[in-house]
Amino acid sequence: MIVFGFACAIPTESAPPAETAVTAEAPSSPTDTAADGCAGAPQVTWNSFGAGFILESCQGCHATTAPERYGAPEGVVFDTVEHCWDQADRILARAAGVSPTMPPQGGTTEDDRTLLTWWLTCATPGT
Ligand code: HEC
Image 1 (tube, helix red, strand yellow):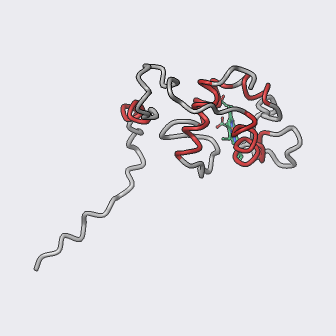
Image 2: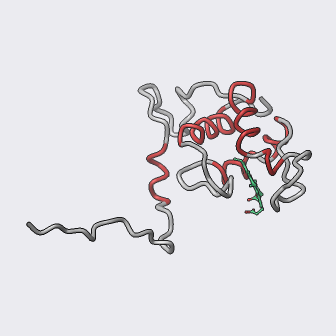
């Protein structure tokens, strides 16, 4: 019997992430008919999600009190809910979606990234 043993996935470092797949990431809820993806989305806020997520995933480098910032820019701090909303666009750009670039070492779950998107896209700004 011939075994094709060379079908293993070889990481293709140069291959760009499939940006076109992003649209398939939209939360699918039966009531979600709006193009903006917020209709039918659960209410996600700083108190219910953001504070814990930012503390765990970002403040190690992006808190004013971080003893070692590992090169995180001084102006990019997420100590408070206000800081996060002020930089919501950048947080979403770097930490949400299918191929996040923050934290640099990765490690966030897809569920958390969906919650992050719902929070900073759908919640009342500042909450
Ligand atoms: C291990 C340290 C570390 C952690 C943890 C970390 N970052 Fe960063 N962050 C950096 C460094 C270093 C830079 C500067 C280099 C760069 O932009 O890639 C940076 C830059 C940024 C910037 C500014 C650049 C831009 O694109 O606007 C944003 C926004 C950001 N990080 C968001 C986040 C978010 C959100 C999290 C949590 C989900 C996070 N980071 C977690 C180290 C970290």
